[in-house]
Amino acid sequence: MAVGLEKINKYDENVIAAVGTFGGGIASSGSVCGTLLGAVAAVSSLHSRGSLDEKENPRMWGVSNKLIKQFDTLTEPYGGRNCRDIARINWSDRDAVKNYYGNPESTRKDCVQLVGDLAFFLGTLLEKEMARLEEI
Image (cartoon, rainbow, N blue to C red; front, side):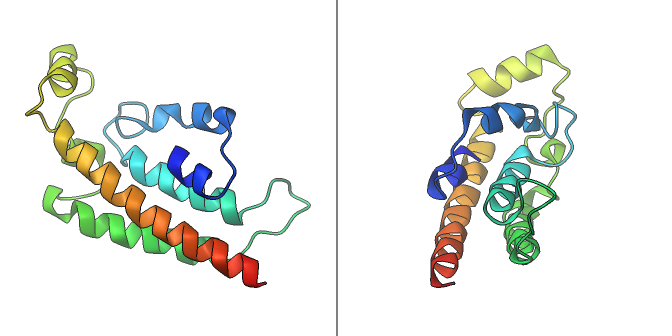
């Protein structure tokens, strides 16, 4: 998410802090991968509203769906978009978590690759969206 916010000139440490629990598939539950959630949040930061008095740009939905489709393609080899499928770790198991972070051959390498691949796609998508907004 940080890279996405930097790309659209909306980097804010408070926002980064607010999504800290996205890791481990939402608070280490193994649910939806935090990488996808962060990427969608970055798109929302560009196209959504800051108050109920403002209007959302409806492009938010289409751009977010492009991200989800790309993420689904990237995660197809793992069997889904959930952290438990990608990282293949029980986040409640301290020894497994230590291995995940400490062993260079752990499934963390897959997560790092996935984060990089989606960040690249997000960056390209946000550049296109920024250019589109400048045309308006």
